[in-house]
Length: 153
Ligand code: ATP
Image (cartoon, rainbow, N blue to C red; front, side):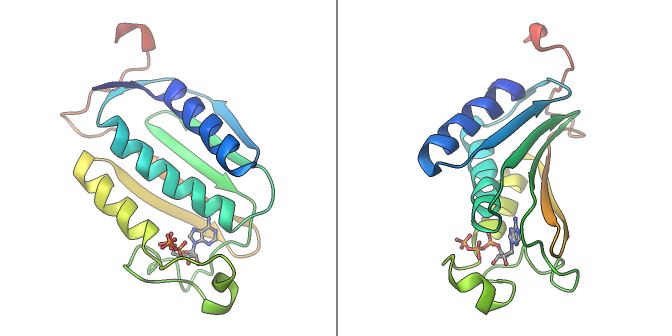
């Protein structure tokens, strides 16, 4: 189905804010429309938002860029030695710091699986002690039509 990514992200942010009482700042730099599975895209976004919520205390930023959705937090970050493993099933950085948030280390591996299913790409950039950016890349894939002009869909 056709998903207008800016309104999709705004809706998701509102629902998440209500559910968790956390402030999310949404910035739209490039509105675009994409043909994809809305429910699956929402699952990926929620996994990233949930991690941002668990591993940071301040405002979460959501950015809609050309072909991308970015979830940005200014939280504890991920050590560079762990960054290659965080998409592995059951992998959690340092059990001690993660224990208070619970979880099984499944969120990111699930996000990756869902991304593969809808032809999207997910990646994480992070700096320990500074924060983390999770990026969903939505185009580059021939069967997905992305357009900068939301009115054409
Ligand atoms: P769950 O099974 O509930 O998803 P989880 O959060 O531990 O638990 P993942 O979402 O797979 O599992 O994340 C794996 C690990 O990557 C986390 O345990 C955490 O250490 C690290 N991580 C993920 N996102 C962030 C983030 N935004 N900031 C800091 N660390 C993160």
